[in-house]
Image 1: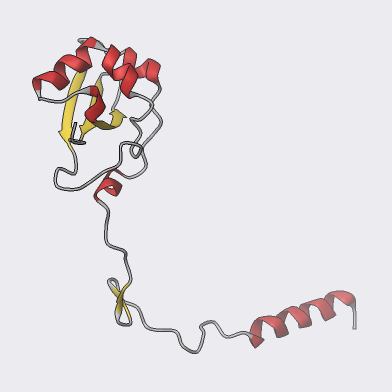
Image 2: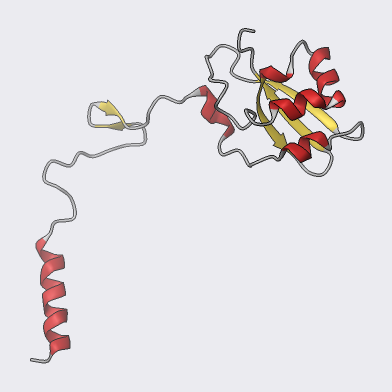
Length: 133
């Protein structure tokens, strides 16, 4: 028997000797696996999904031609200031007069910004949360 045929026979024997599912596998549906829920309880802060990196220079470049959206986020939940993508942007937000004016009109401060999304060339969305200042 050639080496290639021997290797192929050995590979087939290995693959067929293991079962596809363990003997104690449970049948799972969309929401349950056995007696337990199969999906963890959602976290409010996870609703934004993956946030793209926004540079401080982009935030500082926001001028009066931009549409600035303020979105209150997770108003009845507790969030950490370090979550989201605004932790390193709050200083730049505080230095931008356009953003601070819009935040002040809505009763917020740069320290309340949880996340920042740049949406196109002329729109920015600031997700704010009352961190209990």
